[in-house]
Image (cartoon, rainbow, N blue to C red; front, top):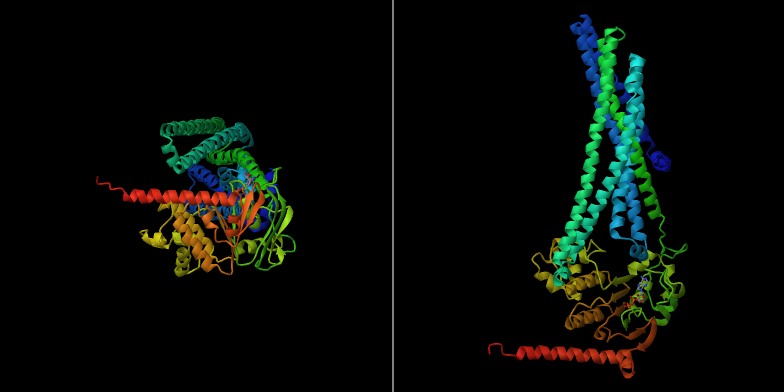
Length: 592
Ligand code: ADP
């Protein structure tokens, strides 16, 4: 029951609603014992032949009044208690979501998306149940149970004790079966979500599956998982199947005792026939509180497990946070990289060493080098995906950590290689960070990213839905949409992190030339495997194993012996061979 004290902050916050709910529950419990008693009295009057029409009408009026009041009051407690528990769910859900959005990349590297989704749904639901159904069960079983038992004791205490003996067994069994049911239900849900994960992955990876001829294996693996889901749901059904008959049997025993002993008492004139009828009706009213009492423990147990999981998540540190005394300026100006060394959290070997250089405002920097040389890491440090421990990056007049994180990120547009498009329209994907912009501005950005023509060719143009529910875009088209998205913001610094890898050389040239014309006074950083993408940069850095191996303009680097010149010549050669193949292809007369 610790969970109730842990949730006390919320109950206090919603004090009025909960007090109202619990108070109304209590009134309903009292009202509930009235109708059975009236029925008993009326039957006794009939039995004695003393019932008049007026009396009967009077009793009926009381019954109707009690029924109407309960109707209204039950509505009130439901709204008060369940409505409040919904608020708790909303509050926890938004807290968690906000926390998720602030957590660093490293967190998402550690956690599986499926798990996080489960926390955001199942755990929150369990907490909501505790604050709703849990509170209801606690007070309802206590109030209704106590009042009905008192009413029964008042009719005949001996009969009450005999008849009530089996009821605690019902509460114990409800708790026991409830626990088993919960466990097996949980396993069934887990199996179902595993199957879902697999389906999702198989559909996403269907191209790979087909190209490796793995269809049969995939189908076999899927069938196995589907069978697992069935087996686990079967267990749930079996426990469920045991539960209902058991409860019916125990309540049946209670009724049997009631009729047996009660009938005997009636013949002995200890109680009247009307009193016995009221008594047995009360017995029916006791079944629910007993069940609720049994369920209560399960609900509470689940709730506290979920609450502690959510608390652990909320306690995850937001590694990158604003400093205490941030300035409210917009970052702008030259960039000075003074990185002595950088090691990823939980790693031991530094991935960047002694990286010192600067970029004047408005210049374009090219960053090249082998895969794994540290290019992306350098850029991630600039947007503070990770924080530097050994060194500084200065933006304008300040260290980047001095700016508000939100301001810094608004000043630096980042287009990663594996960009993400949402399942919405192309227009909304481009205007992602500026939803209120006119279509003309979106078109302008798309034109700069050389994707406008492609979009116009889609049947719904800019309103075409992207992804699973709509058009399948090529890798190059996706990249260009992501570039348009970043260009629209016209940020102080634009980073293209190998984000031209899937476009052809010609398109790349057009985009680079558009960028040069449009971002004259703005800084641009381009990393690329294709050196033609950085050729025109005012400065090119060649990375090798986390260190600057070469630095200079294209011309300067071409005069040096080194990786850059070697690679450039190699790529040129490859391109001219490709061109030759293409022209030869065109010259072949296929009619022969
Ligand atoms: P590049 O962009 O030049 O291909 P990266 O900057 O992505 O290189 O990677 C540089 C090195 O850092 C690689 O050895 C890579 O494995 C490592 N690395 C990249 N990201 C992480 C991370 N989040 N945690 C630990 N190591 C990482």
